[in-house]
Structure formats: C-alpha cells, structure tokens
Length: 213
Length: 419
Picture 1: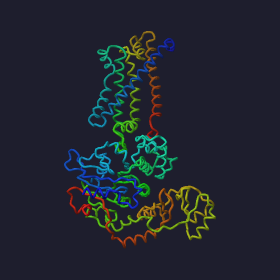
Picture 2 (picture 1 turned 180 degrees about the vertical axis):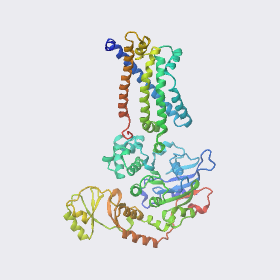
Picture 3 (picture 1 turned 90 degrees about the vertical axis):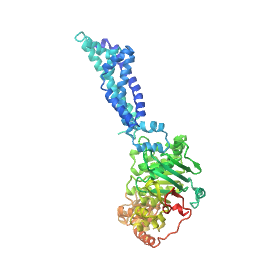
Picture 4 (picture 1 turned 90 degrees about the horizontal axis):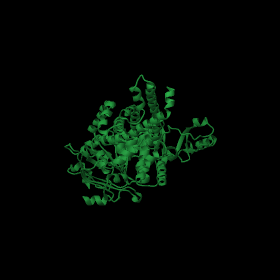
C-alpha cells in the first residue's frame, strides 16, 4: 500500500491537485450561477418554489447517469465533467440562497430603501451580506458533495482522483487494485477536509462580526 | 385655496424662525389606490406641514397614516396628486435621490446588523459622496447629539446595543446628511416606557437645537401631545378628522371619534401638556466626583437640603446621595447609578410623576439638552401645577392654522374649513 503510493507519489499529488482545482472552480462557477438565479427568483413566490423544487429533484438524479448522457453530445474529457459537477454544486447553493434572501427581514429592506438605496444597492449592500452566512453554508455542503461526484469525472476520462478508483475497480483482485481504490478514496476525503477548513476560514473573513452567531 | 397655502407655508409659524433648517411639505390632493381594492387606502388628502415643526399623525391602525407618511418620501408611490417639499415638486424626481434628502426613522431603528454603528450612520453621506474624514467627523458629532459616547459606541454592532441605544443610532443615521425633513414611523414603539420617555425627551431637545420638519406616526395619543406642535387625527382612508394643536384638540375635540381617541380622562390629559421646565424647579446641591464628603455636608446643611446631586465632567447627574449614604463614604466616586430618577426639562408632568413612581422617589432630577443637570422637581410642585392647570382650560385659537382637508369630506370635520 505504502509502496504503491510511494511509487506513484508524483501522480497522486498531480491528480489530487487537479481534483481539488476542478472542484473549487466548479463550486465557484456554480455559486455565482446559483446566487444570480436566486436573486432573480426570490421575490416571486411561485418562481422561488420552482427553484426549490428543482434543487430538490435535481439532487435525486444519479450523477453517473448524467455524465454518461453528457458524453454523447460533448464527447469525453473535461467538458461533461465540469457540467455535471457544476450542476450538482449549484443545487444546494441555489436552495440556500433562495432561503437566505427571502429570510432577510423585510423591515431592513424597507429601511434600506428609506435611506435612499436603489434596488441593486439594497441587494448588494444589505440583502446579500445578510443572507451570506446561509449561502456560505450551502456552498460548504455543495463543496463536500461534489468532492465525491468529481471522482466520476474519470468515467468521462476527465481529470482528478477518479482514475485511481475506476482503474482499481476495473481490475479488482489484480495486483495493487485495492491499494489504487483506497488511495483514491482517502485522497478525496483528505481534500474534502482541507477544503472545509478553507471554508471555515472564508466564513471568518467574510461574515460580518455583527451577524456572526 | 392654493394662495392660502402658498402664503402660510413661508415659515411664519415659529418665532425666530431664522434658524429653521426644516422645509415645509405640501401633500396636494394625494390618493393611493391599490390594485384589486375598491376603496382607496388614502383618499384625496391635502395636508400642509409647516417648516420646522413637529406634526404627529395619530389614528387607529389601518387608517392610512403610515401610507400617507410613506408617500412623502415615495416609499409608496401616490396614485394621484403632488408632493411638494420646500419649493420643489418632488412627485416625479428619482425616488432614491429624494429619500437621501429625507431622514427616515423606523421602529427599533432599522439598523443594518452587519454594519457597525459608524457605518450605519455614515451610509447616506457615503452615498452622497462625502470623503472619509468628513463622514467620520459627522458620525462623532451625531453620536454626541444623541448622547452616546463616540469612542465607546462608534465601532459597536447593533446587536451590542440596547433597544434604546439602537433607536438613538437610528435617529442619528436619519440626521446624517442634515436633511430638512425627518419622517418617523412609530419610532418608539418597541422600547419600554421609561426608555421611551427618555427618547422622547431627547428628540425634543434635538428638535430644539435643529428645528427640522418632523412628521411622526404614532398610535399613542400621549406621545402625540408630548412631541407634536400639531396633531393630525385620522380615521379610515386617511380622512382628517382634526388638525390642530395638542391644547386645542384636548380642549375642543372635533367630534366623538376624537374624544374616543383621546380617552376618557381628557381633563387629566392636560398633565401631558405642561412641561417639567415650565414649573418652578428646585436648585439642588451639586458636587463632583472626588469631592470630600466633609466639605459637602456643611453645604447641604446651610441650604437645608437632604440630598446631593453628583455631576460628571459634562454636568450630567450620575448619583443622588442622601445624608445616610454620604455618612458611609469619605470621597465621592464617579460611578453612574443606573436607577437614577431623571426626566428631561421638556418631559411632561405626566412623565415626571411616572418616573417618581417607578423609581420610588418623591422627586426627580431634571436635565436639559445633552443630559445637563438643571434642577430638581418634587411631587408637591407637580401637584400645585395640576391644580393650576385644571383651573385654566379655556384657550384661544392659534393663528396660522395649517391646512389639512380631504376633498369631498364633510366641512365640519376639517379644521381647514375655518380658514
């Protein structure tokens, strides 16, 4: 096992980095998309319900099936992997952003309008900062979730640690097959922990002391 | 009609009106209809608000008083009619621009919890493009004005303040860009009675320094009498039942509706018309922290007093010590007694009695602007004043009554009909 890792140390590091980078980029992209969507729909009760329904139903789609389907139009490689990961990452953020934005005290929104803030300014200076702890919690959940989902990117021959897992599973019983799977899984877990620590730090930096619990 | 309005809104209301920084407001035949509702929420209201005066809107809930208030800064857009601020018709200008020119205070301050006190107060100046130093100086000035120590409170967050302090910051924020008009929507509804009374006293002091035009919505008639130069009593659909001075509304309610609103003890309500500062105050013996007790006691004996008021560096009362308490110490300390019975000099006799009862004292300390100690009021003084008031209730009609009517309303219910 240790020999397996020592022999492929460079490859493990490289794949881990690619995995991490893939997840972070997709989560950032997904968060931006989800927050913009939430900002568009949260004022409208019907649209907000649709958004909530989509985020609930979307999570039930098997990621494996989705990436399989996407290989048809987009071919193998990075593109289908990015689409699938971003899709799944966006769902928890969307849900939390809608909940967070609708949870902002209407009196404060009116207060913001009352001191002469426009719609956009109210959203950026008041509503988003107040909803931010809830949104960030969603981003954290989504980052944890897609760490796992990203492993199946290997199915589409995408980057990341999925390669260790898939190749190990494909020749289960063969030499080093188990070590390969375990290496992939453990590396994914370690990356998830590191990323989570990063989010705790981000929360410290970006959540105002006035609304921290 | 329009002629009358034009001449009477030129600030002739206040003696020595040169220092007025307020602007008059004219609500001209304004109606608000909501889609899907047959009856308008506000029906053709015409209301003149004199510059530099405090006008209170009172009425039962759902009577349209808040809607009328919010149409002044166009948080609610009027369906018909014009809003004129000072000499400008502001009905069609950019709403956000307009609201930066009008202070707005809501219940419990409406402070933004993720911003520090300084950020909250500096919000409007920042939007108006002031530079950092000017904003920071203004923030400190305003905190002083609302009796909060800038060094202590500037960097706090709203959750670290009491309800009363939040409300003070809310007032400071509304005053930040020195707007001529201040709109207040049930500002003191969410605080306890004693804090409310202090905040009211402070608002009166601030107003006596700044002379803003204040429009304030309340459901508390006592508050309206205490704070208002003029009171508008509304019934359904913002129909103006009476627009008059507090004295006249108490002495001559326009009809049963107003009588019912004033409450049954209208005679005793006159108590809310007399201010603590208008009855004779006792001087009281004062001392400073650090004074030795053996020097203070002879002064008390000479004056025949039983208690001594300890003042801090800014003449604010911090302790009120009896002979017995003095006998236990050698030197006066600078600790503030939180349970001190204090009333502002513009507080009503009602408030003074309240404070004495709550604090279990036979007298109370009277403070002026910025909590400066003025004197002592005792229960005998209040009693004498009550007797005097009850003997002279008849009053004369004040000149220059501002206009307030609803189009098509019955003339007898509109005080404007007298003009």
